[in-house]
Length: 388
Image 1 (cartoon, rainbow, N blue to C red):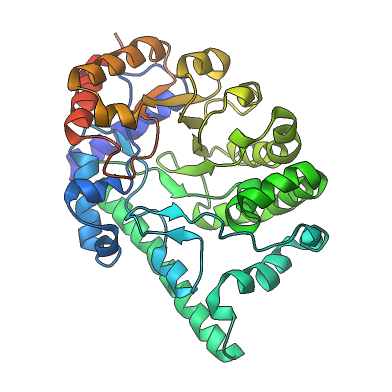
Image 2: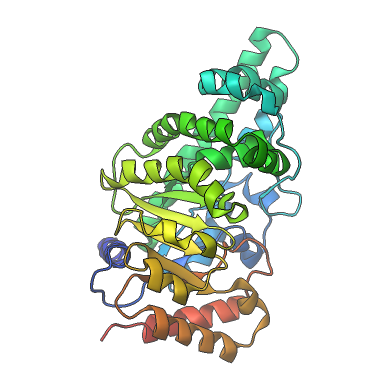
């Protein structure tokens, strides 16, 4: 066990040096693996969510068969039993991956912004939850309270199980799992849970002042929620944020609606020594200049579609860039082609530090990479990505 703890510390420090743009022994390799682990193991999401030992066996195999220095998630990433107990939600696992069900979350009308902005928490509790969750739609107060208690029990059990799984990776494999909390950014909460895509984009055009005010009004609630999960900074735990709305925003709309609350959130926690794993979904190239203003040496930025070589020139001294290995290439290209791509990424992005090798997207479906190609590139980077 002592050897595993030494390995754990070495991996944590390797990732920390990359994020801090410090001299390193080699390029870290990051396991951005989610439901792909279940397909790789040969089980299903439906089965794994019912049996934690099966869940652990599947994710442990996917995270330890390859030379990862850190994993993003310890297992299933969303408390499906909690959502089921609430009798409502926007997540679906019909495809054996966790996906947001489209056109299911427009549960607030635009004329309700003044009421929302007056007291966001009261509006969420008194209006959003009853509309969203079936347990509040029938029965007396006592029955609703009992159902809510069961749902909260499922949520608590899920959180505790994530902590236990994370500890097992540390003790049994010397592998750090960085995701400690996954907060919504305020504007993304409207997109995903309150106004849906169509409603949010209409608000960007017609109710931008109200939406911008609502985002800032949610900021304090989001900060408190993060503290509840991660009360103090930890070198092996990152606030993990998935950004959904910005790729669809023009720079002027991003600056007005999204940027103030997002930047304030990052600055608040960075000032206390927290680290972040941020998934910049889709393409952010029209917003790159904003990212130069974020705090330095505290963010692992994972980019899906951006040209990482351009990104490193613009903000590579601020954000540690992660990504580059396309899941589609891992699935459909030959081993030799994948190795050539990995070599190019190391040659172009590793010099000077501030780069972590990983996939461009979270590995969710069975078609997000063949095990043979994933092993080939991770073995290669482990050897080739050494700093001289």
